[in-house]
Amino acid sequence: MLPYIHAIPQMSYRNKTYVIFDGDNDMWAYGYMKGWNQSEHIDFNFHDAHDLRPLTDRASEETIRGRLRERFSNSKQAIVLIGDKTRYLYKFVRWEIETALDLDWPIIGVNLNGSRRYDLERCPPILRDRYVAHVPFKAKIIQFALDKFPGEYAKRDRSAGGNRHYDDTIYSQLGLNESLM
Figure 1 (cartoon, rainbow, N blue to C red):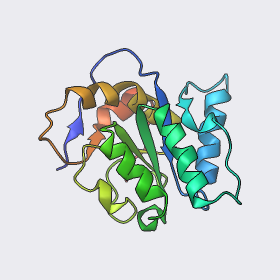
Figure 2 (cartoon, rainbow, N blue to C red; figure 1 turned 90 degrees about the vertical axis):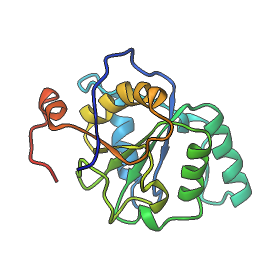
Figure 3 (cartoon, rainbow, N blue to C red; figure 1 turned 135 degrees about the vertical axis):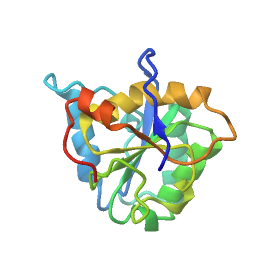
Figure 4 (cartoon, rainbow, N blue to C red; figure 1 turned 30 degrees about the vertical axis):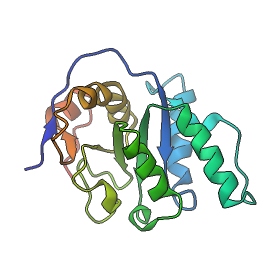
């Protein structure tokens, strides 16, 4: 059984969040997150590092990496949106994940297929056996992870590895009672 995360009460984490995703296939999910963030009716609030100067499709690889570095400098945690093709992306997604790991940031893997745990079929191999929290693509649990996981990550045993997930009781407390995937 994979280790689960114990909910530790603490102050909400309000550093900017760097969102890593497949820009060709998973832009819709990033768009939803931005929409949740702006909605008065959804309790979801993250400080988006991508709000800095926009990139265009014509930008060179050097320009893109420079802008991404700028966004990294304004962040302290990362979300990886894990879609059908995320594990196969190496040009930017892998570089972004490597950078977040090198910076020793807390990383939250968000499964777009609804899985509550590490998904071997979709998750980039670089995150295998890493201290990463995995949650489904639902505003309440993502917000919960943004608020709680960085504190746990900071207090973790540095020799501890393995992916993390939240126990079913947390999902029940959040009103997310559908069955496990």
